[in-house]
Image: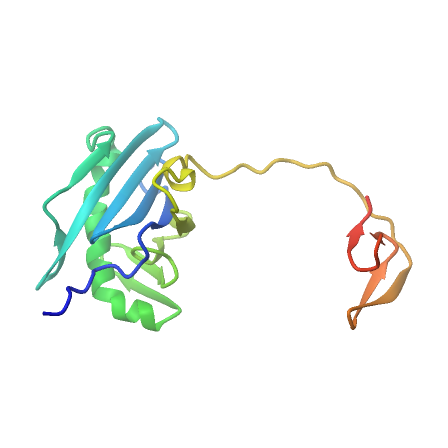
Length: 205
């Protein structure tokens, strides 16, 4: 008897984190493939610091994908907020559309599909391959990666996008340009570029 084909082809620990602003409450939703046809889903609402994590198992049926038997909430509560109450139905909806569209997603660089929502997929994105739902301002992937340990802070402690930090401004003076040859490559640089070894050049501020 051949081994059962897994639902997900990702390496365990692969994850994607999304920024969801569709319902008036900002939330970040992380989807991580935990292995054994199971997803670890994490939600975080920065406005209230509400966090929930749960394992969602899936099984294949003649109709597509269905929820497995051992749903396991490991942190928080599904009734803590409107956002946490939406998580399970949303993920099941995403899984159904993704499973139906898998062949098209893998064959195309970018694939679009519409159900109750408008999905844009890109095959490099882990788990459900979702890039956006609706417009980019409503729901979009913001980071993806792979956990190397069970305490990976990039997934488990993600609380929002980093804010831009203003830096000091400066003005470069117009310098005299000259052609330099480095390892056989000729480039035009002006006097603002300095070097100590004639190999590495940096702008001197």
